[in-house]
Image (cartoon, rainbow, N blue to C red):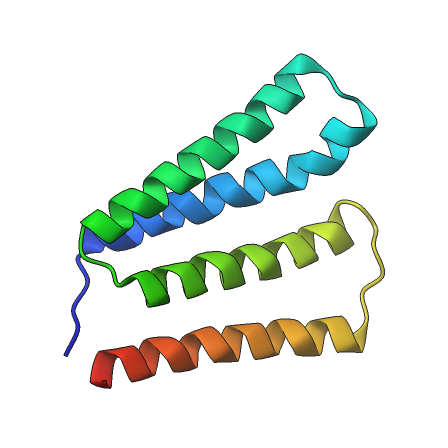
Length: 114
């Protein structure tokens, strides 16, 4: 059985939050390229990758860490797009977000028993 420390999960959470912040600000940075927005985007990606690397160092498997990081980030950005940027919310979009979540849960479950 694979066990992952609480610190690895905390670091992965930081990585996800930083990457989602950076990605959600990309649209603002492209429309209003102020130095501080571009700086926050760059810093967000830097913190995200660093925290992901530290989560791996803390014992999280790379397959699970990357799957969760990318899937949660993708789902969060899709929701932010709908809520903040008024992108269309469709049944298809919701269904595919659910599939992303199901895939990550399945990967985590099989990694624990594989």
